Image 1 (cartoon, rainbow, N blue to C red):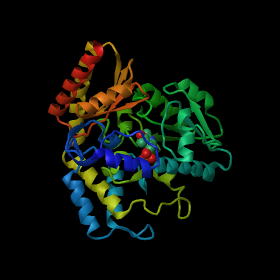
Image 2: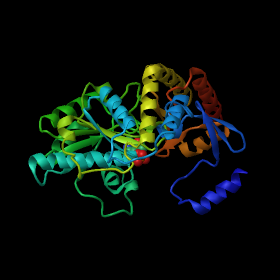
Image 3: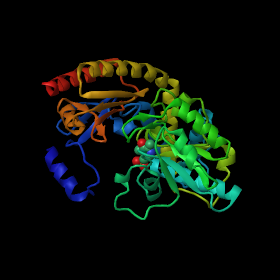
Image 4: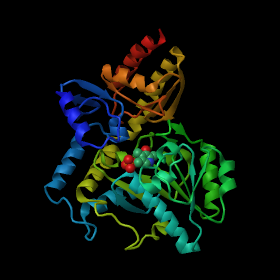
Length: 397
Ligand SMILES: *Cc1c(COP(=O)(O)O)cnc(C)c1O
């Protein structure tokens, strides 16, 4: 049954993804079911999106209640759900104002445009450069792919957008060297997730904040993957004792509805006025209802606090695997985003995990990226570690 649908998909859908060879029909908590009724433990969570697990009842009810009232009205009007969502985001962050959009790439686009415009308003032409990091990932639009520090994502798309200066990650001296009178912003992920789960060093981020603040250079933190509880705090920047100027959000923000946002300080957000930047769907009533239900559930049920503990439990399990199997060369991460770096083919392992009923994904061909729902239970982590042991044991012999 699944093969028929997969063939049809290959006929009708653009071939932009290497997909798991299963047709997913339903999800609940940390589990997914395929068309043949087989169950899988989901340690990918829709690529760090379904933090509350699948089919969270609060989010579902929030979406349904809003759908019963109003789908869409455009940003030419005010709506309650949009105001509510913005209020919660501001109350739980460094920021003062929110701009809503529909994806991570769009959020980063907005951040890039905002940084340029802020600088242009204050300092005039020519101060438009943005320092970005090698091995970063910021999205697939032309501007965000230009900002992305991985040539493989840029191949065939030249000419790219000008004005991005790419420097090695975690090297403050090399950032300092490239800051100039033309720099308006530095853009960075605090964990390079798509790049292989590489956390930024604390000292580095603190110094980055110091040297940018002194020159009125904006610090943009791409929290599309790390935000909304993933790292064990509401936002990853909270681990670093700093305040950014702009953060971008998407992925887990709406539990699966296509929503994105940037949050910024008042004096920065002022650079956007009517006519400068916009989005037809941004902050749409149903999307905003999903954001509010997601955030309220995370807060009311203390899920972020809990995930810090389950994260430690997962880390312990992963370190025990590392001790046992010499082809695990590193285990790194925070909260519930973990990378298991291998000296063997990771894509092959992903297939074996799937056969054993576990969904994991591999980045860079050699790093298993574990981003389970934040509601994952210790018993589910035990299942994952048991099966990993079984698979790795076979690899060892
Ligand atoms: C996924 C991701 C993006 C892109 O988000 P889309 O919603 O796919 O456009 C940007 N930045 C980071 C850090 C991401 O993980």
